[in-house]
Image 1 (spheres, rainbow, N blue to C red):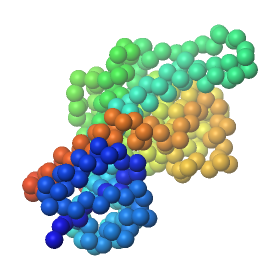
Image 2 (cartoon, helix red, strand yellow):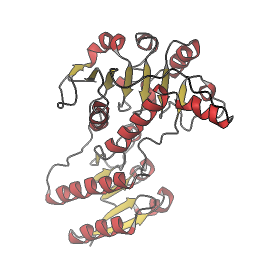
Image 3 (cartoon, rainbow, N blue to C red):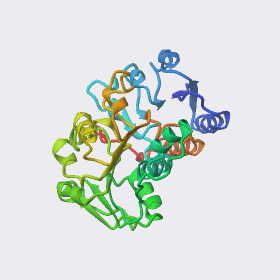
Amino acid sequence: MSRKLVVMLPHLSSVHQNQILAAAQAHGFEACFFDSAEAALSSVADAEIIFGQAPELARHAPRLQWLCSPFAGVDRFTQPGAFLSPDAVLTNSSGAYGVTIAEHIVMVALEMMRRQTEYNEIVSRRDWTRNLPVRSIKNSRITLLGTGDIGWEAAIRLRAFSPASIIGVNRSGKNPGPMFDQVFAIDRLDDLLPQTDLLILSLPGTPETTHIMNEKRLALLPRDAFLINVGRGNAVDERALEALLRSGYMAGAALDVFQQEPLPQDSSLWTCPRLLITPHVAGNMTLPYTVDRIIALFMEDFENYCAGRPLLRQVDLKKGY
């Protein structure tokens, strides 16, 4: 009797599907492919592995041994009752999104510093105003709150702009490599914020990261600082940030993630000055390279699973990452 692998990835290419199918057959698995959780729901009762971002499937899979999320953030799977099977382990696709999110970080940093949103409005009026004061990444003091795959890939790209410094902040204070001038533990954050021109957050969504940038810490930033959040929306106190932006305290902020998504149409954030909003697109699966990496990481851990080896990207459900 075949073991079952349920794959729930919308718009999976035939090349990727054939890769997974060949590996599954080689190890005695039946691979079932679905475009939606609703379609897959009737097939998960005897699933041993699920590859997809669908918590509703995990709650209906009593024989599940391993769920591989194609996303890096897995907070939806860390809540009580997320898994029906007590034996299920969770892995994520951390390592697949660094490139696309790092490019997004560079894009919005330049948009804010070079006033591109305002120039777009000027051009839309067929005006020729061209004297807005701009800023540069060069000689800026950059603090990366989060030094994992996203922080590392962002640091590589930002280094090319010759900033004054690139400082990392993480739980341990350990430096992952030469892209960072220094790395400090999270308890030093309050000391670092007043020396930050550009703050970039790429944190997971956990109780410890909720409102890590609260009203007090946001006010520690210099008056002309910029903030970018590409991690989880819980990390920033949106009301406090909006108040500072409306008061003219901060030079700008770029948010790709929000406490409530989609951002409600009646949210006052839509009209907040100096706030650049993107609809959680920094790290989605629209870049082919990202999808290639997601499949490659799954295939690597699928071989580990079948060989009885530890899974390389297993999530600690208590920590949330």
